[in-house]
Length: 191
Length: 191
Image (cartoon, each protein chain N blue to C red):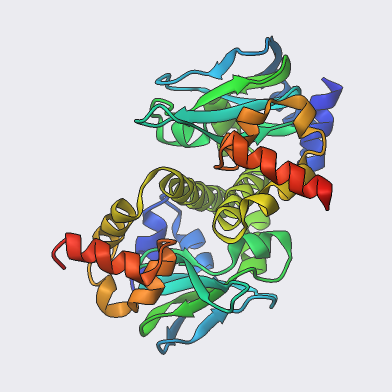
C-alpha cells in the first residue's frame, strides 16, 4: 500500500509500524463513480470511508421531497454514517459522491474490535473522535451565528470549485436558503 | 463516590485499579445558581460530571444576543471540550441555572491515565462517542426540524425542563424568540 494511510494516521498520532499495518489491513482502496451511494437513509451501514480525492455529500429528503445537503466531505475527511453506526441504527442521511471519488473503505465494527485489542489504535480512535467533534461543533456555531453570505464565502474557501461541482440548488439547500437568495448573494459578490 | 463509580462502570467496566485511579482524579463541588463553572476567556483544564442541577453553555454574539448551545442535566459530562482539546480560551460560558453538584477533575491528568491504561482509553472514547452523537443530532435537528418539533424533542429528553429553567433560556436554546416559544406551547396545549 502506498503512503496514503500512513499520512492520514500521521495527522493524528505517531503509531508504531505494526499498528499502522493493522489499520492498513482494515481498509481497502475503493473508487466510486459520480452520483453513487456510500450509504442510504433507513439502511444499516457498516463502513466508514476516508476520502482521498473527490467530494462526498450527505443529504436528506424533506417532507416536500426536496434534497437538503447537510455536509460536504473533501479529501482527508472521514465520511459515512458514523454516528448511526455508533448507535447501531440505520443511517439518517444519504451519503453520495458528487464527483468520481477515491478513498479507503473500512468496516466500522471491525475497527472497534481492533481498538479493544490494541491500545494504540484505541488512542488513535480517540484522536479521530476529537477531530470529528471539533468539526461538528464548528458547524453548529456557523449555523447559529453566520449569515448565508458568510457561510457561502466559507464554503468557497473550503472547496474553491464548489460552484462547478454542485448544482446551485444544492448549494442553496446546504446554506439553508432558496436558489433565488443564493443568486442574489452571488450577484453582490460579482460572481 | 458510589455515584461516580456507577457512572464509570455504566459506560465501561474498567478494572478495579483503573476505577481507583479515576476516583483519585475527581472531587465533588457545589455551585450556586448563577455561578459560572467555565468562564469566558478562561483557558479551562477541568472536565465536569453533572450529578445534580442544570447547566447551560452559551455565548453572546456581536449584537449582544445570547445563544444557548447546550443544556446539561444529570448525569452528563460537561465542560468546554473544544477549548480543552485545543488548549484555547473558552468562548462559551457554562452557567448553573440551578444550584448544582458536580464531580470535577483535571482533564490533562485524565488524558495521562487514558494514555497509560487501555481500559481507560476505551472508557474515554465511549464518552467521546456519546458527545459526538449529541453534536451530530443537534446539527440534524437544527436543519431538519422546525421549532415546534425541536421543542418536542427537548421535552422528550428533559420532561421537566419548563420547571427547571426559565422560558428565555429555552427559547434561546431553540433559536427562537420567547414570543414564538409561547405560541408553540399554546398550540401544543390546544392540540
